[in-house]
Image 1 (cartoon, helix red, strand yellow):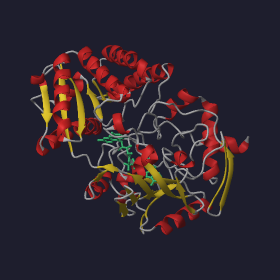
Image 2 (cartoon, rainbow, N blue to C red):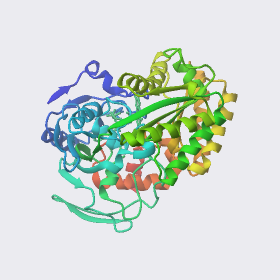
Image 3 (spheres, rainbow, N blue to C red):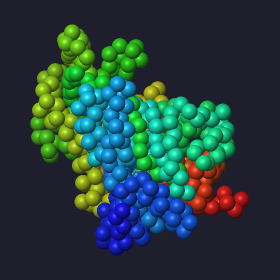
Amino acid sequence: MIVKEKKQDFLSYLEDTSNLKGKAKVLFIPEEEKEVSFILLQASQQRLPVTFSGAGTGTTGGRVPLEGAILSLERLNKIIDIDPKKKIVKAEAGVTLESLEKEVNKYALSFRALPTEPLAFLGGVISTSASGVRGFKYSSVRKYVQKIKVAFSNGEIVEIPRGKFFANKRKFDFTLGRLKFKFNLPTYTSPQIKSSAGYYVRDNVDLIDLFIGQEGTLGCILEAELSLQKAVPDYFDCLVFFDREESALNFVEEVKVLKERGSFYPCALEYFDRNSLDFLSEDYPSIPSGNCGVYLEQEINSSQEKSKVLDYWCSLIEKHSSLDKCWFAEDKKSKEKLSDFRHKLPQKINEFLRRHHQEKCATDIAVPPQHFREMYNFYEEKAKVSQINYVNFGHIGENHLHFNFLPKNSEESFKAKGYIWEFIRKAISLGGTVSAEHGIGKIKKPYLEIMYGKSYLKEMALLKKVFDPSCILGLDNIFPQELLFENKNS
Ligand SMILES: Cc1cc2nc3c(=O)[nH]c(=O)nc-3n(C[C@H](O)[C@H](O)[C@H](O)COP(=O)(O)OP(=O)(O)OC[C@H]3O[C@@H](n4cnc5c(N)ncnc54)[C@H](O)[C@@H]3O)c2cc1C
């Protein structure tokens, strides 16, 4: 095991892409699960807070420690098994998504729900219940996690398979290894829409689902088994440019209807507003100026299907825009180029914020489909009066955009945060979620409190204490740590 005690040796672990800065006494990099177990047991006995660290690509400060120890999973990075028949991969928490996909591709398999950032770790994406660019078809990673191995703060290691331990309405009563559990779940119900906001709770919930999206507060994910899909034989992707936003939104609505009808539909449906494309045009000068864009990826299962699918898309694009204004990617090189393009925007935003020493000032809001336009118009209206640069982009197929302000100084940042609050309140009034995929981490806690109210946050704190009675794991993620100690005294 590697142990680092000098701050200058672990500076990069004190931040993530939110630009929140943290502090810690020590960094542990275990190489075996029994070392994780040992660290946690010791930490529990000493009441030393422990923050789990994945790749640090998170956007909410989840892995940023505010005190105590950091436990990085980077050395637990083996792919343990790939079962091509059952289409299951078993891997350790520190495996990157990039290497996972590369390995399973060798068996003509793919993890189609793959979140966008290739350097993220498996443990990190499960802990945030992340989603990928293909979320329109494949939704979040939650659905594909079949089993996890978890180390609790008392050092016990247990396996939690999907489909074995269910709540009876809101009551759990089960035995895991040597541990007996009997407790009531919180009384709120997690939104039906795409959401990664607090513990996933509903009647009769599967135990494994409490640990997906737990943001390092209940236990350390050591290993996971994921169900995979067959690799897709062929696909094309394209970026359609629109000179009017209204045309882009109408195009998207028609595509959503395709999905509702159950006919073929793209796996990815993503939006780039005018400002996003202008921002990217520094790197891609051939982007037509003043346009917004919709990116789609269409899987093709057979050559017969190909011409039908292409004809369909050509006519739909002609209806709302023009084929001359499309970037089509059919061969490997152009597909890679388009995929890099898609990934470039969040990277550029993060670079911009780092350059200007500003924290992330963005939304991860999703709203019910019937309210998407209202939310979109609200963004536009407020952004115009703000006079702060911004980009608005993301998973439009799931009614989920990332509105990002680009503040150049702390004055703009302060102002932008006020607008973000307005967006949050609006989304909640429409039945939306304050986090659809990035989690709450440290920086979005106040939003979660508005979404659920303090009494539900207290119930979350009680749930955490069931699995982490010494209250040392992922402190200040999801809810303020004071709630843990308030409950103790009450
Ligand atoms: C360019 C870019 C694009 C992105 N695109 C997407 C996207 O499309 N969809 C999306 O959902 N996210 C996206 N993200 C955000 C980020 O990649 C995800 O949140 C990802 O899930 C974080 O994984 P990580 O390994 O970096 O975790 P970290 O940032 O290191 O940690 C995230 C949280 O998980 C906890 N954690 C980490 N490992 C464990 C473990 N083994 N056990 C228990 N808790 C653990 C941490 O304590 C922390 O709370 C993007 C980020 C970037 C920089």
